[in-house]
Image 1 (cartoon, rainbow, N blue to C red):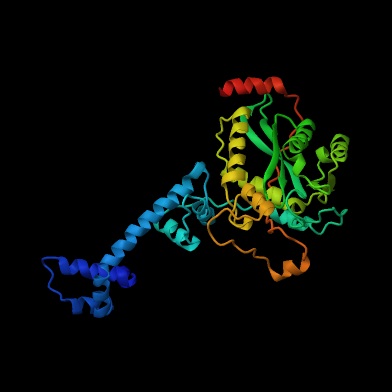
Image 2: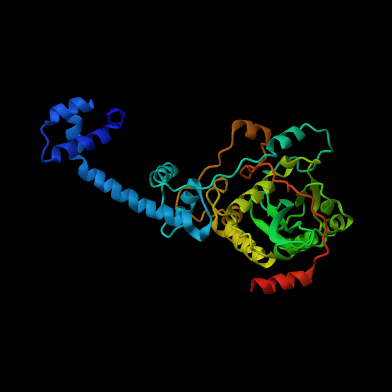
Length: 373
C-alpha cells in the first residue's frame, strides 16, 4: 500500500482502472479515488486521454527506432548530442530535440558509455603553475582559420602479443590534426618509436594537404624527443612550417589533441587478439568515420570535413538554420580575434609503462599482416 500511495498519479489511475474491470470488484470509483488520494475528475480525464497516450507510445517507439539506428551507425557508441547530429545528416534530415533523445534513452534503457575520469587531470592542473619557457601557440587554439594551426602528438596502443621477456608490445600512432576544424590531416601507425614515423606524418601532411597550408601555418607539439630532434626541426624549416611547443610536462597546452586520443580510445573497439595490421585497419576506418561521418556540436553540428568546406565556401550543408557560435563574454573579451569554435580537451592519458625503442621493423610488420589474413 505504501508503494501504491507514493506512486505517480498515472500509476494510481492505472490501478483504479484495473480494479474496476475486475468481476469481483465491490468498490465504486469514488471510494477508490479517495483511497488513492486522487480526484475523480482526474481519473476520468486520464480515461479520456487513453487514445492520446497510445498515440504517444507509438510515436515514442517510432522515434526510438530512429535513435537506435543512429546510435548503431558504423558501430561506434554515441551520446544524445551525437545521435541528434547523426539524425540531422539523414536524408531527409530528422530534427529531434536532445532532451527528447535523452528521455527516450532512459525510458528504453539505452546507455552510452561515459568516458572515464582521467587520474592525471589533477597532476596536469598542478603543472600549470610551473615556470617554463612560453610557447608560440599559448593555448590560442581558436586563432586564425582552417589549416593555420596544426596539432601533433603520439599515443601508445597496446597489442596482445608478448615479448620473450614477458613485456607488453605496443603500436605507436602519430597524428596531425587541424585545431580549427578538428580534422585529422595525417596519421601513421608504427611498430617502434623511431623518429621515422613522425617524419612520415609530416610528409603525408604535405602530400595530401600541402596546397591548403598557409604561409604562416603553425605546427604545435609537446617537448618529446621526436619533436626536438634535428631531423624533425629541419624538416619543418624546409617545409616552411613554424614550430611551437607546449611547456614541459603540461598536457593542457595541447588539450585538443589529447582529447582526440581520448575519444578515439573510448570509441575504437579493439580486441585483445588484434595484431598490428588489424589495429591499423581499425584506426583507418575510425579516422575516416571521424572526419566524414561524426558531427561535432562545436563545429555547428557538422563533421570536420563538412566544417572545413563550410568555412571555405560559406555554404551550410544541412537543411536547418545555421547554429550560432556560443562563446562566453569572458572568452570573447580575452580572445577578440578568434574566429573558430572553442576546442575543449581533457588531460592526457600517459602510458603507465616505460617503452623502450625496439628494433622491430618492416619484416615483423609483414609477418603480422600475414597472420591477420
